[in-house]
Image (cartoon, rainbow, N blue to C red):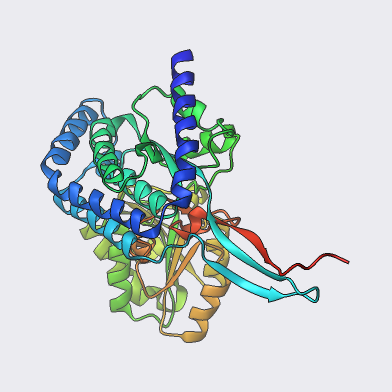
Length: 419
């Protein structure tokens, strides 16, 4: 235990020192590092696939659940996406040093704000090896240092990616300690990381509800987080049913194990008889089990009865809860009660109801006529995301470059003194 404590403290000391170098690094230097990492990822794809294959073999032998295995898989396409994400981050405007909101005061001074890095960001995540690259890229561009603690199930791939990131940092003349990937799988390392308030400024957990609850309860450092991804699709009475079918299919069945997958379907009563059988047939053809209210079961005989708990549940599996609602008002009320405030979508051709849904649904991403699967930093043009926040302070929704910065007041004067 003392060895783990000493190891993590050393990472913290090095990260704090590196954060100062990153805060003053030029945009050109940071972009050079990102492009070098992207190039090395493409060059080393065979090494990364082999490391991932080793991780998958161990994970399967250890009985890792299907949703986690799905997140662990790294494909050729996934490697290309990681590299593309870094290049997209490099192409984005650098938020650091941006000045805004200048106003003259009667005293003659000028007051404004400047965007600055948060400092050292600790990121704790499970399975997904792409998080290593996304987090590294965003922290580099936003002038932060990062301590990354991936799950034990991805240790081989994460270490291979760490070597690539260090290569890119070195090529740009930046300290390799700007991005450190924790090399131990000992869970005690997490306990240390979330309490190192002298060295770490914010913690971002990405993973299952159990992990995030633990971090939230035990951390002595501010946390950016979301617990569940209980996302909804509401099919309004004025919906285009072809759109509804495509949106629901993509929202629920493209991938089952992600936080932006739809877990609940709401259908307006006036079109339920017309819409629900075809929506249910599509879900059934994809192997999705339906758990519905009494009205749903009357129209879809194979549906199982839904409990109140079903409407709260993030399944991460081929199951969906379904409810027939009176109108958009009841849909909004249901969503605000049962959702996890992650992502909700309405399918409608009615502009007024679309605006009402956008205004009144209390979630971090709210969509009109689009799949919930778009709730993602890469899809939002952020290059990547460090996580999704359902909190209301500091950052909300996919957290990209701007979410990894803070603002400080700056004052410009010409010899003024306070009277």
